[in-house]
Image (cartoon, rainbow, N blue to C red; front, side):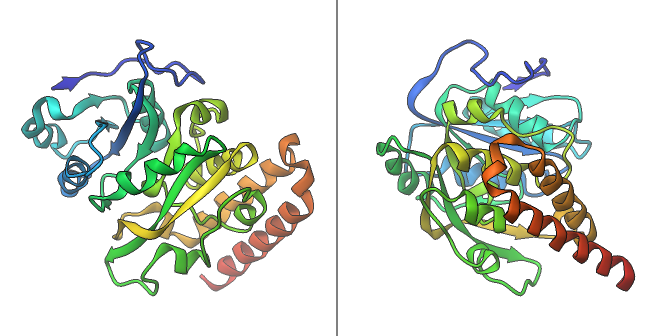
Length: 276
């Protein structure tokens, strides 16, 4: 079934019709010219051993025939098309059109372990936990790391704002978050090309405990089209993020650490300009 574009209400991530179903996980899959991979992503959700979920695919104005791919799923998947405004807008749009007490995100080129939701949802019996993430295993192109936790230097739980400011260890395709918390932090920031997820997890870390599921429950595909593989652009994005955090009153207690990270990435950016 195909649903066409309807305008997202800025800053409001409640369900469009107000219906929220307890225990339901709304799985949001944004796609942009990923028709080669999106079936694997969707199928990995439909095979989940946790059965209370809905799947929402948001097409960010692709031109690769993804709408034809979606026809095979019928009413098992809700499919929306919207004008091209980037991945943050697509994810936020999907949340507005969902009904779950919990929200999960899956990039169209990644794949879930079939037990992912079954292993993560029980953590939310602790009301102090607002977000649960898992490890991810890299596949596709050769990469020097096998697991995301290896690349990030570990996995942390509890009140993790300080650890998270040192570097992002939360993969977007691995998380499940309480809807109310996602609403509270304002969703994903728009007009941010790289690191929009990192900014959101930092806001979450100030408000809630974060819990790791310490096993690889996601397969993260490496391929040449990923924006995050451009090192200079990544450094620019981090410089901009840390600069904005220095002005953010919510992060006053962490300003010395934020300033140190800001200087670190300014130096890294300068070195890459000289070398490349």
